[in-house]
Length: 328
Image (tube, rainbow, N blue to C red; front, side):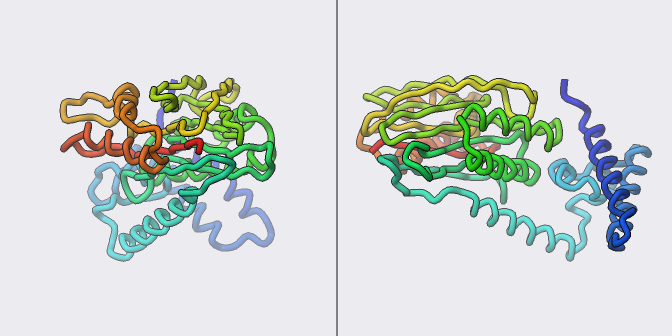
């Protein structure tokens, strides 16, 4: 059962207070610690008084996304002064640039594999995660991943960046895909709020065409091979929900011209004005018309166009990511 978000905020504030109190007790504690401790105590007082998360000017709830990022905020966006609004805009712009800098470099060919991707956050930043890491040794394989953090905006982007760093660090430590994803799950369980979790597909592609896959509740990768489109089930619970979850792996073999498509739920859960979902089947049907000679870029564009066409005039409601890996 998911805990009350207000209790999560209280627990986070109490943890911050404990850490600040410990830091203040050191001989060389800077004066800033006392100011921060006062802000945390004020936030706890608001929580005890039932006004936590409410704008002190209008009394309406502060934007949930901002509150998740900073439980000390006291005003909604409508009541920030010009200086505060400008500072927030600069932070968002910088966060967008930082997230863009974490994306893989498209158009790279490695060990007979080419790949391309599309990454379209709903706002300035998003909660989708996409990465490709070339092998450091001939037997290591090309590592690739697509993930999706619960929620949207700033809070989700922070967890996505955390996941990005975790996977890269765990890759450097070595081990199988299963070991990497199980460790990432335990670390996310220990370091994020209980209201946050992530879905993920993690894979390795080898020069001989063999691909290993391990998943955590992400949409099934689509294999484009021999003129057919086949969903590949990769079982596993979302990361960050249960510390002891198991994540089995599976292997497939791709011949020259075959491709593997990974995507976030902003693609398969695209909704038309009637509320219907494109679904994995609808995405597979759109890809069925892709020619065997199509490049990874053309395949990625087909996925995005299929979601846009199905959505029609309806607004996009989620981050959208597609990663295509093709055997050349």
